[in-house]
Length: 449
Ligand code: MV4
Image (cartoon, rainbow, N blue to C red; front, side, top):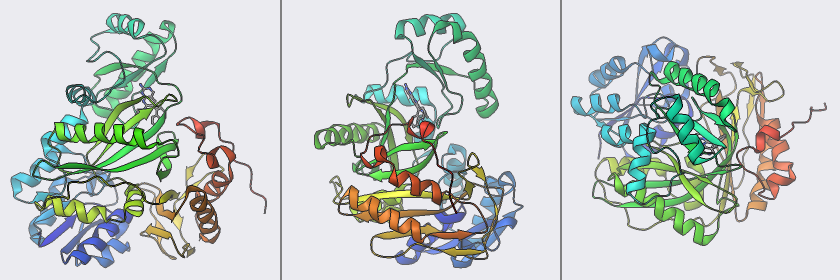
């Protein structure tokens, strides 16, 4: 096992990782920017190193500065968390060259899944269903129009370096092709420095259902059930749950096997997520694979009753996993509490948290790095807490969540709590009747005092 892990991240995930390290008897190093000096991850780590000013490029994204912190603290492993450098293959490579363990898959696995066309080709070889489409880079407009016609409109144009919705365009007819092609390519070039594009049939009203997998260094890969992440707004997830209300035993078996094959095909090591689109006929298609721990991992932890960060650290240290899949025995829902104003287009609302009362009680979990008196900096992601409820059934879980949201009081900044309260009361949500387009049509009612 590792002696000392440096956590190359901030916020709730840095704190989450420190907690598990403490329980495992592993020493911890926090790194922080000047904007985060009063953060709990700094307070609770065994050591803390300031790595630069607030701007991410000067701190949490700055590889030389993080490596300097590794050097002076003599850490023997780095946990990247999610976001920042978590899926940066070059960073994983620098760690390996430096002789510290990057807690995650190899640089090659990260690269292979980071390029979406390569990822798709890999999945086809592994027998994992993918959305029909161009099957490779589109050389130019004319070739693109030809392929789009063959695939059949509506189609979706995606950036091979993309993911999470950037550089993506839906087209309903050939008339739109040229203008949408140009816009998507420019966006991809500006965001990723890579304007390689591919085409897929557009799946209408899909669900986003992802499978948590874990692989060890000995070739074993198992799945830990699904998470339904269809409740999203502009590609930002707001609610995740397990089991998916859409899931059936035979579908879980088929999708779980596909997720395991996806992992085995690249000898996957670490925790990872295989994302699928699922249409209304329950056809499923590989969308992308995330080679990191995800924000929504507590949903899985609650339904299978295992610490995923602990399992992740154990496989990074070379431990073998038990060779069985994990099926949900309960229901869990996570609501992301962001410092945003849901009544004003979810505009970020940084600033001083003047009072903070967390929800508590049986089956209620809150993962957060904030407290009364904490100042939410404007430089980073606006998530300030994750509220996770667990109960025997989905209905009880929603009822518990409503109760927990009523107890959750944050003053000083606007939060997404009122949004979640209304969502939990929505009839379609309660009936499990939703897809990825649900929130685009969800109408928030003004709050009465
Ligand atoms: C799609 C799709 C429909 N058909 N691909 C959005 C983010 C990126 N991961 C892929 N995405 C989509 N790909 C085909 N062929 C619809 C989406 C999509 C979506 C997917 C998951 C969750 C929310 C979404 C919102 C809009 C579009």
